[in-house]
Amino acid sequence: MKKDDRTAKKQREDQALNRVLWWFGGAVVLEFFLLLLNRFYFVGNNGGNVALSLGLFRFLRVFAWVCLAVAVAFGVWWFLRRKKGEKTFTQGACCAAGLVLFVCALVSGFWGDRGGVHFLYVAVPVAAVLALIYYLYQREFFLVALQGGAALFTLWLYYNFFAASPGLVYALAGVVLALTAAACGLFFVLRRNKGVVGKVRVLPRKTNYLPLYLAAAVTVLAVLTALIFGLTAAYGAIFGVVAWLFGAAIYYTVRLM
Image (cartoon, rainbow, N blue to C red; front, side, top):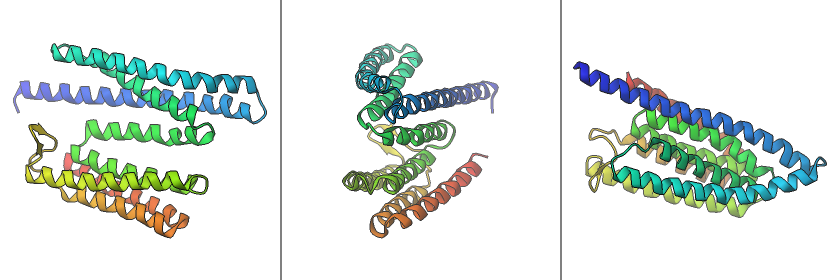
Protein backbone atom coordinates (compact mmCIF):
# COMPACT_ATOMS: atom_id res chain seq x y z
CA MET A 1 0.00 0.00 0.00
CA LYS A 2 1.33 3.41 -0.97
CA LYS A 3 2.04 6.05 1.64
CA ASP A 4 -0.77 8.32 0.38
CA ASP A 5 -3.22 5.41 0.51
CA ARG A 6 -2.15 4.55 4.05
CA THR A 7 -2.58 8.18 5.11
CA ALA A 8 -6.05 8.38 3.56
CA LYS A 9 -7.07 5.11 5.22
CA LYS A 10 -5.79 6.35 8.60
CA GLN A 11 -7.77 9.56 8.21
CA ARG A 12 -10.96 7.62 7.41
CA GLU A 13 -10.44 5.38 10.43
CA ASP A 14 -9.81 8.37 12.72
CA GLN A 15 -12.92 10.09 11.38
CA ALA A 16 -15.03 6.99 12.01
CA LEU A 17 -13.63 6.62 15.54
CA ASN A 18 -14.36 10.27 16.31
CA ARG A 19 -17.95 9.84 15.19
CA VAL A 20 -18.32 6.77 17.40
CA LEU A 21 -16.94 8.72 20.36
CA TRP A 22 -19.45 11.51 19.68
CA TRP A 23 -22.28 8.99 19.67
CA PHE A 24 -21.13 7.33 22.90
CA GLY A 25 -20.49 10.66 24.60
CA GLY A 26 -23.97 11.84 23.66
CA ALA A 27 -25.47 8.57 24.89
CA VAL A 28 -23.76 8.91 28.29
CA VAL A 29 -24.97 12.50 28.72
CA LEU A 30 -28.49 11.55 27.63
CA GLU A 31 -28.63 8.61 30.03
CA PHE A 32 -27.59 10.95 32.87
CA PHE A 33 -30.42 13.36 32.09
CA LEU A 34 -32.86 10.46 31.84
CA LEU A 35 -31.86 9.43 35.36
CA LEU A 36 -32.52 12.97 36.57
CA LEU A 37 -35.84 13.03 34.75
CA ASN A 38 -36.84 9.75 36.34
CA ARG A 39 -35.90 11.12 39.76
CA PHE A 40 -37.70 14.45 39.64
CA TYR A 41 -40.49 13.78 37.16
CA PHE A 42 -41.85 10.42 38.28
CA VAL A 43 -40.74 10.31 41.89
CA GLY A 44 -42.39 13.69 42.30
CA ASN A 45 -45.66 12.18 41.06
CA ASN A 46 -45.36 9.55 43.75
CA GLY A 47 -45.53 11.92 46.66
CA GLY A 48 -42.70 14.41 46.17
CA ASN A 49 -42.76 17.82 44.50
CA VAL A 50 -45.94 17.57 42.41
CA ALA A 51 -45.56 21.12 41.07
CA LEU A 52 -42.08 20.31 39.73
CA SER A 53 -43.37 17.14 38.11
CA LEU A 54 -46.24 18.99 36.44
CA GLY A 55 -43.86 21.70 35.24
CA LEU A 56 -41.52 19.12 33.72
CA PHE A 57 -44.46 17.40 32.05
CA ARG A 58 -45.52 20.65 30.35
CA PHE A 59 -41.93 21.59 29.52
CA LEU A 60 -41.26 18.26 27.76
CA ARG A 61 -44.31 18.66 25.53
CA VAL A 62 -43.14 22.09 24.38
CA PHE A 63 -39.45 21.15 24.28
CA ALA A 64 -40.14 18.26 21.89
CA TRP A 65 -41.46 20.57 19.16
CA VAL A 66 -38.73 23.14 19.75
CA CYS A 67 -36.14 20.39 19.16
CA LEU A 68 -37.93 19.33 15.99
CA ALA A 69 -37.87 22.92 14.69
CA VAL A 70 -34.14 23.18 15.48
CA ALA A 71 -33.49 19.86 13.72
CA VAL A 72 -35.38 21.00 10.60
CA ALA A 73 -33.51 24.33 10.53
CA PHE A 74 -30.10 22.68 10.80
CA GLY A 75 -31.18 20.03 8.30
CA VAL A 76 -31.98 22.72 5.72
CA TRP A 77 -28.66 24.45 6.47
CA TRP A 78 -26.86 21.11 6.09
CA PHE A 79 -28.51 20.51 2.71
CA LEU A 80 -27.65 23.96 1.38
CA ARG A 81 -24.00 23.70 2.45
CA ARG A 82 -23.72 20.18 1.03
CA LYS A 83 -24.97 21.37 -2.35
CA LYS A 84 -22.18 23.96 -2.36
CA GLY A 85 -19.58 21.32 -1.46
CA GLU A 86 -18.82 22.93 1.92
CA LYS A 87 -18.14 21.17 5.24
CA THR A 88 -21.35 20.04 6.95
CA PHE A 89 -20.26 18.20 10.12
CA THR A 90 -21.52 20.83 12.59
CA GLN A 91 -24.88 21.23 10.84
CA GLY A 92 -25.35 17.47 10.54
CA ALA A 93 -24.43 16.88 14.18
CA CYS A 94 -26.85 19.58 15.39
CA CYS A 95 -29.61 18.20 13.17
CA ALA A 96 -29.07 14.68 14.53
CA ALA A 97 -28.95 15.96 18.13
CA GLY A 98 -32.19 17.87 17.60
CA LEU A 99 -33.91 14.77 16.22
CA VAL A 100 -32.67 12.60 19.10
CA LEU A 101 -33.84 15.12 21.70
CA PHE A 102 -37.18 15.46 19.90
CA VAL A 103 -37.77 11.70 20.08
CA CYS A 104 -36.66 11.50 23.73
CA ALA A 105 -38.81 14.45 24.81
CA LEU A 106 -41.76 13.14 22.83
CA VAL A 107 -41.54 9.65 24.34
CA SER A 108 -41.00 10.99 27.87
CA GLY A 109 -43.67 13.69 27.69
CA PHE A 110 -46.44 11.87 25.86
CA TRP A 111 -45.83 8.41 27.29
CA GLY A 112 -46.52 9.86 30.70
CA ASP A 113 -45.81 6.95 33.01
CA ARG A 114 -42.39 5.40 33.61
CA GLY A 115 -42.67 3.29 30.46
CA GLY A 116 -41.32 6.03 28.19
CA VAL A 117 -38.19 6.67 30.21
CA HIS A 118 -37.59 2.97 30.79
CA PHE A 119 -37.82 2.44 27.04
CA LEU A 120 -35.23 5.19 26.51
CA TYR A 121 -32.94 3.57 29.09
CA VAL A 122 -32.66 0.66 26.64
CA ALA A 123 -32.98 2.52 23.32
CA VAL A 124 -30.18 5.05 23.89
CA PRO A 125 -27.32 2.56 24.48
CA VAL A 126 -28.66 0.35 21.68
CA ALA A 127 -28.49 3.32 19.29
CA ALA A 128 -24.89 3.98 20.39
CA VAL A 129 -23.92 0.35 19.74
CA LEU A 130 -25.57 0.44 16.31
CA ALA A 131 -23.59 3.60 15.52
CA LEU A 132 -20.37 1.81 16.50
CA ILE A 133 -21.23 -1.09 14.20
CA TYR A 134 -22.15 1.26 11.34
CA TYR A 135 -18.88 3.20 11.47
CA LEU A 136 -16.41 0.46 12.40
CA TYR A 137 -17.77 -2.75 10.87
CA GLN A 138 -18.99 -3.90 7.47
CA ARG A 139 -22.27 -2.47 6.24
CA GLU A 140 -23.88 -5.92 6.13
CA PHE A 141 -23.18 -6.43 9.85
CA PHE A 142 -25.05 -3.20 10.52
CA LEU A 143 -28.08 -4.59 8.65
CA VAL A 144 -27.83 -7.85 10.62
CA ALA A 145 -27.60 -5.94 13.93
CA LEU A 146 -30.47 -3.66 12.92
CA GLN A 147 -32.74 -6.65 12.39
CA GLY A 148 -31.60 -8.20 15.65
CA GLY A 149 -32.22 -4.92 17.45
CA ALA A 150 -35.76 -4.75 16.06
CA ALA A 151 -36.40 -8.31 17.28
CA LEU A 152 -35.02 -7.55 20.75
CA PHE A 153 -37.04 -4.35 21.02
CA THR A 154 -40.24 -6.18 20.07
CA LEU A 155 -39.55 -8.99 22.55
CA TRP A 156 -38.68 -6.53 25.33
CA LEU A 157 -41.85 -4.54 24.68
CA TYR A 158 -43.91 -7.75 24.61
CA TYR A 159 -42.40 -9.00 27.86
CA ASN A 160 -42.84 -5.72 29.73
CA PHE A 161 -45.98 -4.11 28.30
CA PHE A 162 -48.16 -6.80 26.75
CA ALA A 163 -50.42 -7.01 29.81
CA ALA A 164 -51.03 -3.23 29.79
CA SER A 165 -51.09 -2.51 26.01
CA PRO A 166 -51.59 -5.68 23.94
CA GLY A 167 -52.85 -3.69 20.95
CA LEU A 168 -49.67 -1.61 20.81
CA VAL A 169 -47.49 -4.72 21.04
CA TYR A 170 -49.38 -6.52 18.27
CA ALA A 171 -49.21 -3.42 16.06
CA LEU A 172 -45.46 -3.08 16.57
CA ALA A 173 -44.91 -6.78 15.93
CA GLY A 174 -46.83 -6.46 12.66
CA VAL A 175 -44.71 -3.49 11.63
CA VAL A 176 -41.47 -5.36 12.43
CA LEU A 177 -42.58 -8.42 10.47
CA ALA A 178 -43.60 -6.28 7.49
CA LEU A 179 -40.29 -4.39 7.52
CA THR A 180 -38.38 -7.67 7.75
CA ALA A 181 -40.21 -8.97 4.69
CA ALA A 182 -39.42 -5.72 2.87
CA ALA A 183 -35.76 -6.08 3.90
CA CYS A 184 -35.65 -9.56 2.37
CA GLY A 185 -37.00 -8.09 -0.87
CA LEU A 186 -34.27 -5.45 -0.75
CA PHE A 187 -31.60 -8.11 -0.16
CA PHE A 188 -32.87 -10.03 -3.19
CA VAL A 189 -32.61 -6.91 -5.37
CA LEU A 190 -29.15 -6.08 -4.01
CA ARG A 191 -27.89 -9.60 -4.63
CA ARG A 192 -29.19 -9.57 -8.20
CA ASN A 193 -27.68 -6.12 -8.87
CA LYS A 194 -24.41 -6.87 -7.04
CA GLY A 195 -25.06 -4.46 -4.17
CA VAL A 196 -26.47 -1.54 -6.18
CA VAL A 197 -29.95 0.02 -6.12
CA GLY A 198 -30.39 2.47 -8.96
CA LYS A 199 -27.09 4.31 -9.03
CA VAL A 200 -26.40 3.96 -5.30
CA ARG A 201 -24.05 1.28 -4.00
CA VAL A 202 -25.57 -0.03 -0.78
CA LEU A 203 -23.37 -3.08 -0.19
CA PRO A 204 -20.01 -4.25 -1.57
CA ARG A 205 -20.02 -6.35 -4.73
CA LYS A 206 -18.84 -9.52 -2.94
CA THR A 207 -21.24 -9.35 0.00
CA ASN A 208 -22.29 -12.66 1.55
CA TYR A 209 -26.09 -12.38 1.75
CA LEU A 210 -26.66 -15.57 3.75
CA PRO A 211 -26.20 -13.85 7.18
CA LEU A 212 -28.70 -11.17 6.11
CA TYR A 213 -31.36 -13.77 5.30
CA LEU A 214 -30.53 -15.67 8.50
CA ALA A 215 -30.97 -12.45 10.50
CA ALA A 216 -34.39 -11.97 8.92
CA ALA A 217 -35.34 -15.58 9.75
CA VAL A 218 -34.19 -15.15 13.38
CA THR A 219 -36.23 -11.93 13.69
CA VAL A 220 -39.42 -13.49 12.31
CA LEU A 221 -39.00 -16.66 14.37
CA ALA A 222 -38.37 -14.73 17.60
CA VAL A 223 -41.38 -12.43 17.16
CA LEU A 224 -43.74 -15.26 16.18
CA THR A 225 -42.50 -17.36 19.10
CA ALA A 226 -43.50 -14.61 21.52
CA LEU A 227 -46.87 -13.98 19.88
CA ILE A 228 -47.80 -17.66 19.74
CA PHE A 229 -46.33 -19.12 22.95
CA GLY A 230 -46.50 -16.18 25.37
CA LEU A 231 -44.31 -14.44 27.93
CA THR A 232 -42.04 -17.32 28.93
CA ALA A 233 -41.23 -18.03 25.30
CA ALA A 234 -40.59 -14.32 24.69
CA TYR A 235 -38.10 -14.27 27.55
CA GLY A 236 -36.28 -17.29 26.13
CA ALA A 237 -36.32 -15.82 22.61
CA ILE A 238 -34.48 -12.75 23.90
CA PHE A 239 -31.51 -14.94 24.85
CA GLY A 240 -31.72 -16.69 21.49
CA VAL A 241 -31.48 -13.40 19.58
CA VAL A 242 -28.62 -12.20 21.81
CA ALA A 243 -26.72 -15.45 21.14
CA TRP A 244 -27.26 -14.99 17.39
CA LEU A 245 -25.96 -11.42 17.49
CA PHE A 246 -22.95 -12.50 19.53
CA GLY A 247 -22.13 -15.13 16.93
CA ALA A 248 -22.58 -12.59 14.12
CA ALA A 249 -20.25 -10.17 15.95
CA ILE A 250 -17.55 -12.86 16.15
CA TYR A 251 -17.97 -13.69 12.47
CA TYR A 252 -17.70 -10.10 11.25
CA THR A 253 -14.88 -9.28 13.68
CA VAL A 254 -12.84 -12.17 12.27
CA ARG A 255 -13.54 -10.88 8.76
CA LEU A 256 -12.03 -7.52 9.71
CA MET A 257 -8.71 -9.13 10.61
